Image 1 (cartoon, helix red, strand yellow):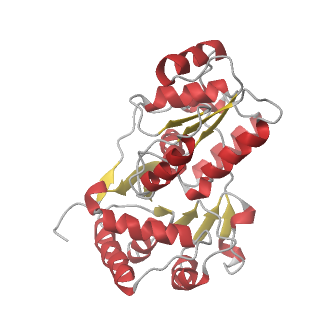
Image 2 (tube, rainbow, N blue to C red):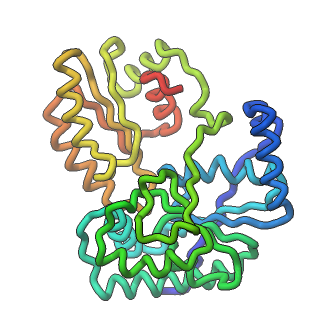
Length: 323
C-alpha cells in the first residue's frame, strides 16, 4: 500500500455554549456534570472512529465533542481516510459481524492485512497528542492497542457482543482486555468473558440541540414527502431510519408491515437508509436484496442516496412522531 494519510480530523461547526444545554438539566444533575468535567479540564481526549458520517457513532461524536469542549475538556475526533481501501473495510465489516454472532470466515491473509494497516494507523495516532484515547468499535481496535502505549485508552463497543462468534472473539478479546476501560451502551451487550471491573455502561441520550429535535408540523412533513418521495399524504406511515444492514433487519420490518396491514390495510412503509457510511461496503448489497422484494409492492418506499439527506431524514422523523 502506498504511503498516505490514514487518519483525517473531523472539522466541526459552531461551538456550543454550556448554557445552551445546561438549561435542560436539574440543579443536581448540572452540579454533577460540572463536577465530573472538572476532573478532565485541561486534559486532551481524542476519539477515533471508522467514519465521520453515516451511522450512530458519527452522530454521537458530532454531539459529544462540542459538549466536551464547551465544558473545558480539550477534545478532537479523527476518522479513517476513506481512500485507505475497500479491502480494509471489507475485513473490518466481517469482524464487526462476527462480534455480533455471525459465523464469518476471516482468512489468514485478511488478518495480516488488518494488522498491517492497523500498525500504520497507529503510527499516525502516536503523532496526535492526547491524555485519553477513545477507540470506537473494532475497526480501530488494533490500531488503538498499538498506539499510545503509556496513555489511558478506552474502548467503546457500540454493538451487542453477548453472543459472539468465538473463533474471531478469541483473537480479539486479549486486545480488548488491555484497554483501561471497556464501555457499552447496554448492560445486555456485555460479553461475560470481559473483566467486570473494567466494564462501564454509558447509555445513549438525546442531544437537545440536534437539528433532529426541530419540530416540523406533520402536515408540512407529509406534503414534503409527497412532493419529494411520492409517499401518499394521508395513509398510516411506518418508517425505519437506519443504514441498510442485516443487523437492522429491514426484511423483518417488511414482514412487520404485513402484520400491521391486517389492522390498517392502507399502511405504507418507508425504509430510509442513506449510503454514507464508507465502513459498510455490504450496504449496497443489502439494499439491492431489499429493493428486489420492495419492488414488487407499491406500498414500500426506499431511500438510499437522496439529494438532501438531512431534510428527508428529519421529515420522516416528524411524520412518525419522533421529533
